[in-house]
Image 1 (cartoon, helix red, strand yellow):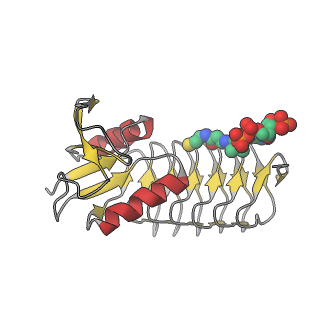
Image 2 (cartoon, rainbow, N blue to C red):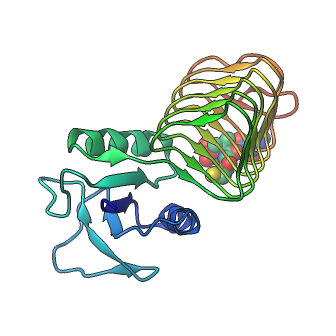
Length: 210
Ligand SMILES: CC(C)(COP(=O)(O)OP(=O)(O)OC[C@H]1O[C@@H](n2cnc3c(N)ncnc32)[C@H](O)[C@@H]1OP(=O)(O)O)[C@@H](O)C(=O)NCCC(=O)NCCS
């Protein structure tokens, strides 16, 4: 099988490693998004940190595959695009305990964690994250680089724009559209559309002061 690296050697990276191993993959190591001093030899969970995305990475070959494991949506998008520019191939990391119902799809580079449910005909975009125990219901669209945090729930026909973030334990009413790079705070209940770039919190969710 062609080599597989995890971009991001922090906690998110450890979670992605566990997902990939549970799914039968054997990643060859981690790569840092930022520079790593050449003198530092490091291992995470028994795997080497091979280098970084900076410059012309020696660890990258034409058939290297990758998953970006960074929690911040902006940072994840930047690293994802850098990997594509290097000619690497994104793969999806889907935990075997996640449920994908009929017609559900997960784009390359996306991550679906343990116990998550991706409903009927729902779509999870490239480099998006559906975290532990979250649910994405029928006909939803999770845009590229978006995050559905642990235990968050999207009702049916919800759309998350590119880079949108739905915080831990939040819920989104059916049919609502969450705009690009908007933030839904943990524990919120969204009952109306959220404009691009807005930050909302509370039950029902309202714009945050800052
Ligand atoms: C919404 C959020 C992003 C704001 O983070 P922040 O910009 O650092 O905000 P702060 O912690 O400085 O709080 C700013 C104000 O918002 C309030 N606030 C923060 N989070 C809130 C929430 N989830 N619901 C309601 N109010 C919240 C704070 O109490 C504070 O109010 P104050 O100004 O009256 O004291 C963050 O609190 C949150 O909910 N993150 C989700 C965490 C998560 O999902 N983690 C899992 C990742 S996979």
